[in-house]
Amino acid sequence: MWHCLIVEDDYENARYIAKGLNELKHKTVVCHTGPDGMKQALENKWDIIILDRMLPGDIDGLAILSTLRLLGNKTPVIILSALSAIDEKVRGLKSGCDDYMTKPFAFSELIARMEALIRRTQTDQTLKHLQVADLRLDLVTRKVERSGTPINLQPREYRLLLHLMLNAGSIITRTMLLEAVWDYRFDPQSNVIDVQISRLRRKIDSGFSPALIHTVWGEGYVLSEQAPSH
Image 1 (tube, one colour):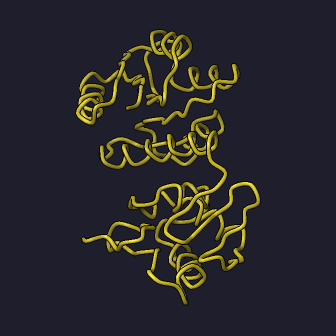
Image 2 (spheres, helix red, strand yellow):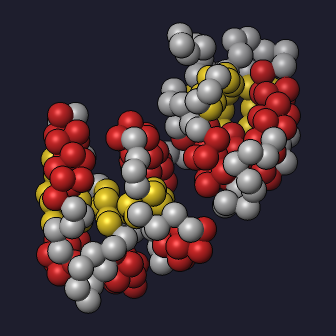
C-alpha cells in the first residue's frame, strides 16, 4: 500500500486519479492549491507525489518540487502537465522531478510509472542486485551474468537492461524507454530502440532458455520469464 499525495487544481482530474488509486487499496490525500500542496509535501511522509505543473497563485508545481529538493527530500515526484514542449519537460526534470507525464494520460501508464519509481526507490535502499530467472545484475559492480556466464554490456545496453529489470513483468513503451534511457534525445519514430533491443537480446537470450526479452507488438517490450499472453 502506498501513501500518495496528489496536488492537482483540476477537481475532476484529481478525483479520477484518487479514485483509481483507492480502488487499488492505496491511500491518497488530495490538495487543490499550491500552498496546501506545499504544506502537505513538507509536513508528511509520502511514498510518491503526483504534482500538477500549473497551479493557481504564487506557488506552482515547480516551486513545490524545488523546495523539496533544496531541503534534501528525495520522495519520488511525477509531474503532470498540459505543457508538452520538450523545454518544459527538461525544466521539470532539472527541477528534480523523477518523471513527467503530459495530459491527457492513461491511468494504466501512470500506475506503471509510479510502480517503477517506488520500486527503484526501494531497490536503492534495500537491494544490491536484481534477478529475473537466471539473469542477475549486480547494482554495485554493474556486472551482469546469466546462468553464471558473464555478459559484457556497453553502457547504453546496461542502462536499457537495468530499466527493463527494474520493471520486470511490466510492458515498457517506446516513449518510456526514450525518456528513461535516451533522455529525450531521439525522435520516437527512430529505430534506435529496436536496434539496441536487438543487440541486448542477442547477448541476454542467445544460447539461453527461456527467452526473457519479449516484444509486445503495438505496445513495447517486457522482460519476464514467460512471454506475455497477448
